[in-house]
Image (cartoon, rainbow, N blue to C red):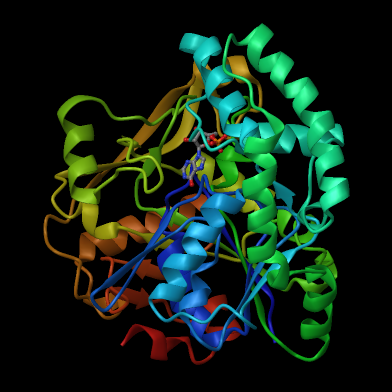
Length: 441
Ligand code: IMP
């Protein structure tokens, strides 16, 4: 049974949720491997709307086991809120949800440090979600982080909390002029959280190993995206985890030799939330129009997303860094009314033409996109059941994108509903999940 990684190829919000939702009926396990509750994922089932931040949406499928891997940072208050909302709506968590003992906790001082640091950076701020994700990963790398397993040992938890608070309180007060915390205001709620979470905390690397040995199929659900990766993204305007496919291994304990393929998700245009370089960014009325048509507002913070044209250089980079076997293209319908659709094929930097994404921060800020203009199709794509049903000019757009990125599409999404999905012939997706067609009727 194949174990496949689904990864964002741009700056996040590519519509990974819909792609994962189409695949989930055909796998046994969905695992998150990085990030935290900075991710936001809205799932509509019938008339019910669920907003998930830390729990994989596979939880809405009764057959599916969901794992929060060791690479994730978990805010227990936010996680429990999500769990309670699910339980109230009749979703069973026992036997379905498993949380890694080694996942690090987001503590109340992490969002406080996140916000204080952003305020201090002023115009150089990252534009974080303010959830404390960055500071939690700082503690993990500094080897002072508190992990899920620590929560289950009251004495150890108190000891680690005391050590951390002594340091964090000084930083908050003396560097940021912000409020400090007293130990009891954290200890008491966190011990209550421990009682709630204890039945779900386990050695998930071992569980995953056993499940894979017994023939289960695992889907690794990436959060955020390639250009926000801590090593490969547009540093420092990134999130603090390994969002790319390699993170699936370190963030779960499943070795690379047990992973069989990588599927990238890309939007038919680009968006970015927060600050940082965005070479194909649109301005003015055009940006407003695409934002409105694509409903481009952050699921976690509600912030308007910056909008831009499809950047084939970014996609080629994502193909290379993640080893993408195929790409799912989403939101094609948002471009249905554009007279001209632009695709960035390279950049000009100091007079030179660049066709590979540069890693230097200074170069990133000064890139000028080189565009190819493609005639718009000016007719609806929604409702097309296969590629042949699409307007000829929309097909030409898709073919040109495939040529430019060097990988073919496995799926084209033309609306939020499952039925608004085209499965492309002869794709790795159909090889990995031969029954996937049954998901889109
Ligand atoms: P942080 O992850 O909250 O530290 O934010 C760092 C950067 O990643 C900011 O630009 C955020 O807007 C961005 N970011 C974090 N999570 C997401 C997401 O789920 N979608 C899109 N952007 C995100």
